[in-house]
Length: 129
Image 1 (tube, rainbow, N blue to C red):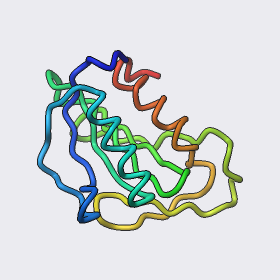
Image 2: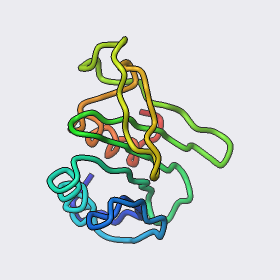
Image 3: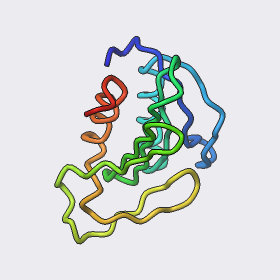
Image 4: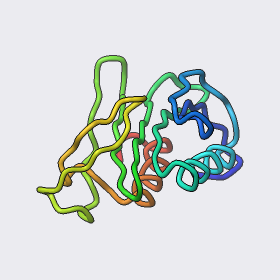
């Protein structure tokens, strides 16, 4: 995805640590900067991202430290949890924020944050990935 591409997103606030549901439309670079700031100052965060001209898909990413979990909302009635990248043992327990609440997932649903970020980009381009 090109850095100049526009996305619509809502995310954890870097100052308060709370999810702000109000969507923003920016270039992908600003979203990347926001996620980088969350990594540095909080070590965790949650975001919802979609393309500005489409209601769906919405891709959500919750992360804590270097573990992340992705959901894809294909439409108002269909959501899927994306399998992890194999870097976390399947029997491990991973906790990441979903909005403002901690959510627990098995390790087989967790990816490294970098791999999840790359997958988020691919899913926005082609939801069938």
